[in-house]
Length: 328
Image 1: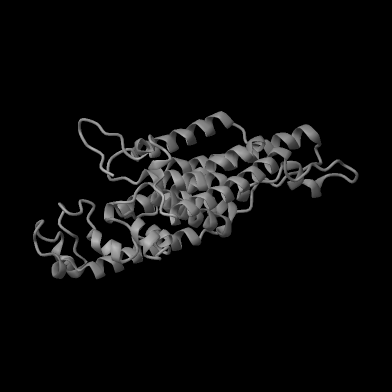
Image 2: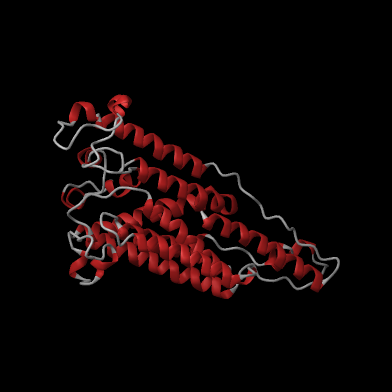
């Protein structure tokens, strides 16, 4: 939630920078204070789509008919076939794992040996329960709407979908005996894109340190939650890295001198649209993105286990303590 405010603060900082430039250069020089704001419709559509998919999953799950009562009775039976599985089976108020797997949950065996690569995409739209769904959709609203207003639906939509896909690929490489669902990888991609957007557009922001520290703290806290058991932190990390690199490619802002070039007097020197370091970041990010997806997909469809190449990586998803143990 704080990340949405951070983006809003970034907008006001841009305007402040524009005003100071105006005053120091020429009284006749004017920079448009209000950035173009896009109407956000794609992110709300994503929210509606996720909720609709969850309703369909619960309808197919049909707990009263399919649950035999071995783990207790269905929860909220007044909902009929939309009622939830017993809490011992699913404490998040949702369907059974069998239903999720049947409808497209990420499953390494089926992806690699069952020719079902489509699960790398479908798992992004599935959620384990009402609690899981609400947490992700609230995050999507607070983060995604602000980004879409600033950068438009095409760029934000690409970041969301490609980050979700990147999270699925990394999750498949490291979690091979469980199923995985959720939009968390895509959401972490939006957070990663916010961070790279701040870095690549560094020169147009004031209060740089405060914005950077706030965003890093938010990201660290969210990633730290992923070390709890039963949380797929590899999807979070994969989505975050994908979104972080995509931000350098898709979220460049032009410099102020370029934005206000039409207001300059004739013969005035025009600032280049982007800084050299922005182009450098873009090229490096593109190379890393292509290399990362290529290597990840090759390893995945060769059936390799990521843990064989990284003996300590299991700590990234779960840290065992006296209170809980970490399975695969």
